[in-house]
Image (cartoon, rainbow, N blue to C red; front, side, top):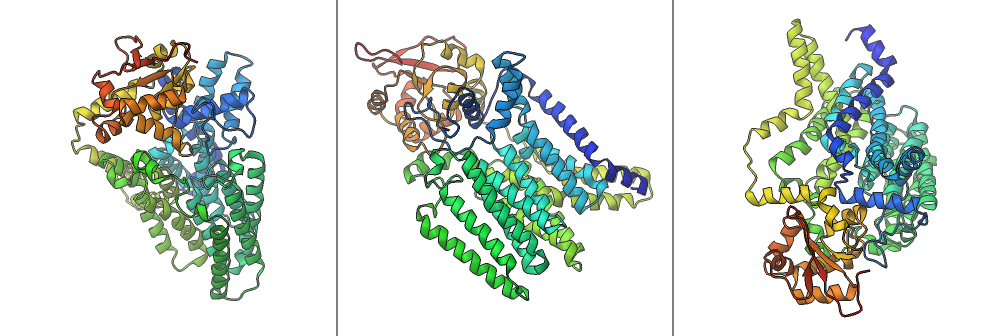
Length: 597
């Protein structure tokens, strides 16, 4: 691009971010318009987040994040914080001044996810401008919008915490490329603390970013201010996050949130980083030995102080792992999904890794220029590797691949622009973006016929119908009660009806989840005993829902399988529902004097 065009992009890149964001907002709202109108919170976590916000606005204690309409009267413990509740609650409170509460909620759940998208777009634009050049900003923003796993986390109604955590992760990426070491260190520590105060989902990637900052210091002692600022802001930020946002349950020695376990560990890590930065060590070998010793001390403190957190952070029992956690789709490795899913998730990260390799090769003789690319590449490799353990690493893998993919696309576009023919320059540039964005791979895979089986079509039909307001409205008309239903249906049920449910898919509530799993897989007698012990009023099933396939495969003669076949025990009496309802519902027959709560 000529100097005048490059200068325009360099001066007006913020305007370009607003243009891309506005276009993305229009596209996403258009795609989700019907879902917004029908309050179609499709994910269990989005529904529970809504209930958490309602609890806050209804006067629930700031530090009490238990959801008392799951597993009453004890309530379901969740490992979240109030941070993500704040923008949703703020939008609702403001809009209530002008409209009904229901309409305010619809607008809030549509608008709130778009805020972290704006933050991340601004970061990616700044990062692309800093590492490649101002004219490449549009390429970086375009690739971000092509990252479907990331984009889905910012779609209207996707109000859970992942969107904000991705925004914080992008800030960590930006920090690693800052040529002012101290400023970059402060940003890296603050972004890490913010993300971990929301949840630990990005812990490994943020730890890798911290490791990358330490590696910069190993290579060049002049990077000491970055390491010192990182350590200080990490420790201080986590302390503030813990004091302001850690729930009552998270103030116990739990492993899955910013609790005393991780606060002490991160404070020790921050102190170690500050101490290392103050050492006057000549040569990278001495700094490496000192860093390894400091890391070993921090790891030893963690292992000795919190031995119960050395395994999986969820702390799930083998029984819960076998019956539930190991069967969650996002917990499966990428190679256990279809070719379509594999192509959609992996195409952009692979292009990103190729781009990182290209930039490392091009800057191999310039250590200063290579350092930020090496740092970004190191962090980007982690989620790509983790995809072969759990597919939930997909959004992080795609986000972290953007700088490398943008560099690859920009290099290919540059090669196309060297051609004298205008048509070749235009088509070559479009083709370069098409290849790098992953669209080429995804479109190629779509040519492979993959007709879903009849059983899968039934599951897709149930998954689409069961959570809708239309289907749940007849359920909501029944007298309020305590419902024994599917784990994945619990959060949606309590969000759009007045009923309570036994469980939602939240690992801390192991006994509630096991009660549901065993209840539907076991005998009618065992289910009756559980229902009686809990004081349940209704049994509700949605035949064909994804979760129910686990019941039928594990227990083809179990309680759920019998209900589907019309073999209803005497302690249940049918509740009449519309003929087109995907549900079947029964009221529990109780001894005289017992009525639904």
